[in-house]
Length: 639
Image (cartoon, rainbow, N blue to C red; front, side):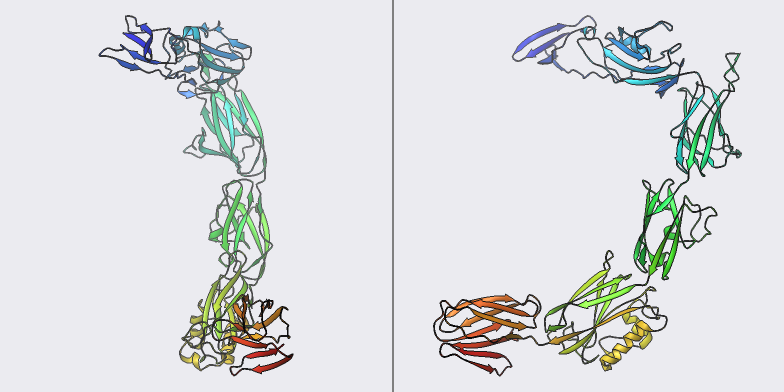
């Protein structure tokens, strides 16, 4: 078999395989392409693999990073794709530097073939090695590995004394926080782990790390026996249910003999002291809350997996076992769902990992956190965007309703229940609207349009909402129309008995519903004047040609409504489109191009309902006021 290196169009190198079809110790160039039996019927392209040099330190099948001196380890290089003949160094660096040859155990680590390296996959002895930290790495010798210069990852190993030892992941912890105990010894050591104070407040957590499951027969004070496995390390999880100082001890209890010789290490022990601090809940709550609002029960906890919050010593389902995540807990509830439905102070008490169910008596021990909240009654305020509105114009009701989710808006005609609806064209009776209340700032607004057939005069405007009990009056009904039916036999707001009632009678009914004994409903009352639309021009002073002609006026059209103002005579001056601003408007005509004559100034809202004009004539200075037949006014001015 022949390998050819091709750098087109030339054959640059030819390599002849041996009798076993192998080519060894060739410095393969990275440029060009390689073929087996080039330009023959059996021509095959040759690919080159990236070197793979895995390295793991094991005792048996378990990876290790720490062992007791004398424990044999395995150098696992499974998957390495170097040739068996490649020469490598197993670079072992210990407390006293690199170990090239281990004389006590007759182990060569440098200048060995990959085949020899893999023998350490069965056993590498550590008898007589120094106590301390070691690193292991495999590196090729380029000159004896086909020019390959590569290395594996560096693995670390701690070699410990032949003694039983115990340490904790932390020696200061909060109640219910998990602590990891690390016990080290020699493989096969039989041990007993327990709290020296025999406290029931020490709870080993079965199934976590190497912590064994409880024995079939309960073991007093939660202790257990175990055996050190092949890597010399065991890890156990425990928690403490009360604050204080605790000593955890490990005793070496066996085996009694090793190889027929009494084990002098039996009876050795080690301890670790752990200080446990009280667990604590800190609430993060507002000082004052309105009954009926949504409130977030929240805060921080120093340990635990969940917290239960009692309201005035009562545990409600929604405040049971609130999950603690990253030391914080939070639960949104409605005050009336968790017993916060009476004005005054309520006290919150929290217990971490409380094993009580909703409705059960609170724990006997002191709470892990306390807080207090002042509950106040819901409030309702409202205002209208305007005192008077023209037909077909809009108005808005603005309101703040703490503790409410929705409000109802009623409007009653000057004619009472027999009058025309304010916002429903062609309808009689009361107009009803609803608005949702913001859950963040408890405000709402409702924009409505006065219909063209609404009655002229003052409409009564009511804003109502249920109180803390969520029902209208004492009827037990959440819906206003249903409440009026139950208490007053008013089955409809647009037909029937309502059509026979005056404004005053309807007012008395709504007031009775909201203010009757036992009711906590809220009601606001206002008045809205409905008018025909009008546009009014103010008197104009006489002007000469070239002077500015200032036009001012008033209107009951809504804010921002557009009015067209024109000035027409022998010539037409440039018209103006102006906006109503707080019931007024104005503009200035340039009379530079005006000629002597009579001009009519007109203001028009373009609806046919609101318009007015005045007349200007060039001549002697005389101003006459004339009222039009349609109630509008215009001015005749002669200059």
